[in-house]
Image (cartoon, rainbow, N blue to C red; front, side):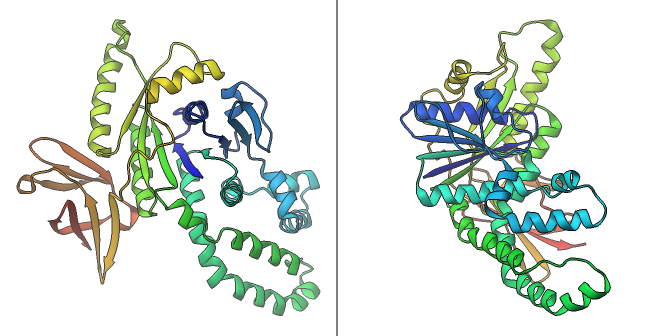
Length: 388
């Protein structure tokens, strides 16, 4: 089963691109599921149909669903939800509000990963496309398997033991409910379900991340941050999708400045993301809603390309540590090694040659550190950072 995860800043058009990608893949004969993991679902609006928490048939070979976190809690993790609700109600909050507050931020991302694993094990579809919440939620979503594995091995056994020891004293003195064995079993089962998911998500033959951006400075910056962190987690980004570009047909003088800005930002995107494939989508003259327009939009983006293909496979950015130093390995092929100008400006690492400029948002671990050395090995630029 092939997996494509589509992410980007809110409002860039992730849902339209997710739906158009899914429709085009289904028309190529692939049994395709597109699922929304954003709490503010808009996938049904894009497809112009009513969707539920289970996959529903939208067109031939095309299924869609909007993940319902409450349904997933009740179905599989009712002990956890009951404990949270009871604890909140004990503090004086009404039951309806307590149930609402029991759905913590991040649960949508967590349960969508669990659903994805189940689908993968069943090999239920040829292709699953995840229409994700904005960037930060996607990064949290993709880090869940790694974090949960660490928690299960390092923290969970200690917490379980401490609660057993403390329960008699807490019950008598503070009248506060502590989680019982049913809650701990639910938590453990949840964590164990995620086991092996990192291997699936980090396998470039199976999973691709696609980043959607618009031609706006803040949006491009967020796309760059997402690109850096996805690489650091070991996930394969196989394409950048630039959406809502003003087409050449617009000749109104009012838009002349915007068209020049779009040109400048497109140049910046190429310098920031090459050699990744960059897919461009013009701003349509009407809202892209319904299968007819999504079909047109998908053909506009991909042309004759198969949207389920893996468009790019490599790990352009990797950070390692060596004693008190950090080494940034940056894959930059086809440049003249003798004419590099390398410097840091704010949160960006900027590389200039006589022919072009490359930009990269620095990860937090390298912020505030100085470049001590830089050298090429094969097509990788190895940059040594040390504390100032």
